[in-house]
Length: 384
Image (tube, rainbow, N blue to C red; front, top):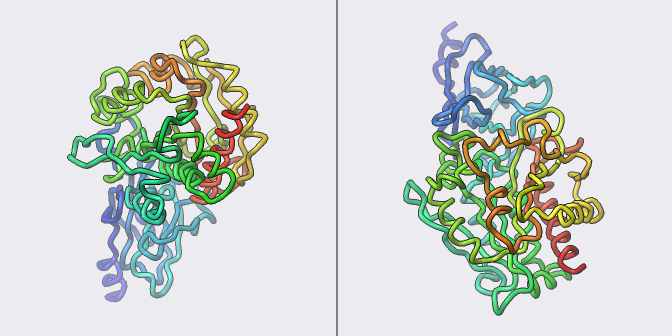
């Protein structure tokens, strides 16, 4: 009995990890009750990340008391302080719980709702390619965030002279949608590669990226979605966030030919487990429907990654959530762009699932592969 009490006393569940987010409630036997922190989110959302210490040798069930928060493959698990992640608790996972057996020497384990992508990951990507700094890419600053952080942006490809084509990409308008930034990194990597695709892109295209539109939220582990009073992707009317003000000021001057904004959908079910694009209002002035259809066709044709895009999976304008009602609080970046940037020939959103995409396992590598496929589409679209 004393040994059991000592084990329970040593067990800790907290949010003391990068982008941490959890509320520990209690433990009863081998069941730990927790829920996700909503912070300034209106309504409900599902992102969480927790650290568990002192559970070596135990089998514990983690039960979420607030709402569904466990993805279709269970959480991602790291036993090495975030160096690697795996879907190691998929068996028996439900939408509100999962069970995990800790190894006999497993004294600290990290659990995330989805694979994290943090500013340090972006920095490591740039540093890994540091030999190309100033020639194939230039790192810069978009603005200063509300918390005083320097929000990164970067340019890739044709940096000297006037490029034939300009592409602008964003991710993390909703900071918890981490898989989106893996895709953006994959596109950027294609511009750095020593191959025929990379050569063509560097000669012809300037790619500008903002990997963390909600930078502070990405660091803190916020939900981001439905942030009060405005989340970043409903702020293109009120302009309350410095990142959005900077984008609104800079991008029209850039005059991009394409803007691709990468997101993630809900946790599970239907279109949420398919790589897709929600189609936009055909009445927006710079919504070029024929170009969007051609881009979709090229992606279907040229994709090589395990996550397969099918245009038939796209959500039409006016169906389900994809209506004017979804933008009652304010304009999204793509709707704003389609209303204000006449240079745009392509302006679309990717919805990249968190864990399952048409049966394929979603990982950092599969998302990077989608990014490379997107780079191939950019070349093909601009070459035709």
